[in-house]
Amino acid sequence: MMKYNWACIGCGHIANEMAQAFSEIGKSFLGVYGRTPANDEAFAKRYGISKIYKSADELFSDESVDVVYIATPHNRHIEYIIQAAKHKKHILCEKAITLNSNELALAVKAAEENGVVLAEAMTVYHMPVYTEAEKYIKSGKLGRLKLIEVNLGSNKDYDMKNRFFNPELAGGAMLDIGVYALSFMRRFMSESPNEIRSAVKLAPTGVDEQAVMLLKNSSGEMASVTLSLTAKLPRTAVASFENGYIEFENYNRSIRAKITFLSGGDSVIIESDGKKSPLCYELEDMERAVSGKENNMRLDYTVDVMDIMTKTRKEWGVVYPEEKE
Image (cartoon, rainbow, N blue to C red; front, top):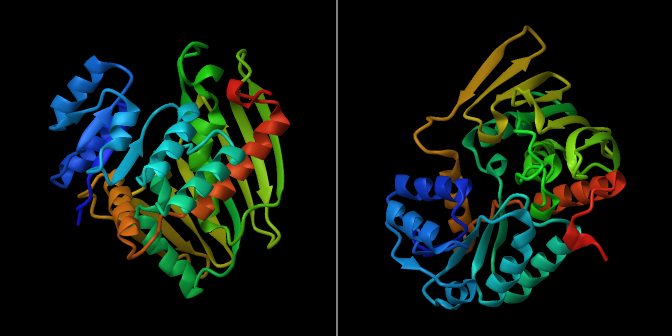
């Protein structure tokens, strides 16, 4: 199905994973642009990429490019999104898609005005396991959603100069890993939360190092979210319903889930075939959206999650240099 020409901005870890996903399906990026020419050349050689752009403007001006994949630090996303939209390029942008809700509103407006698809590269919205789980939910067998518990924690080197703790690179747990947990929550909740309580521990640089969030929407659905950059946690996520619950393993890239029904204790295992890397599903869904056939990119969920993150960071007093007046 992959019939559009893609160009990549950024050559970091996640860009390499996306290039590998392209390779799995017999395709590659048409071109790449990054800040370091030597890295661009190595990236292009590694993945058989034919074009290396000298500037972002050169990439955006290339009429043969249909879709731009943005894999730079969070605080550079908005400028590239706006430029891509103005040049009529469809946009798949790494999470978190922008720094805050104001930036995202500008991005959405630019995409709408220029008739292009804008989406965040969020695996939770595309993995087949979630689609299969939703069939059970929609069948009514599980009843109404009651509670979600989701965790994500890693043990990063406590170096205030690396990107995880550096405000100059939009560091902090919320934008780096919280976006996964909140996206999981939003996928299953019937509506976005309107009540949020939280506690946070800030790093010496002023970014959020660790946090616990409690969320509730007007339907009475609740969620607890635990995040940490300094404490390793299992990547577990559970959605609990009236008549049972669903457990997801390694939920941000889940290939397995277990549904347990309370009546009789029966359970069902859902597994994907594992033949594709998680990012392949993002690519395929993005191309469907670009083709106009079916848009499952969940930009509305992305907006809801960004609203939550922006409001909560404001309460914490976590402000990035680009946000200071």
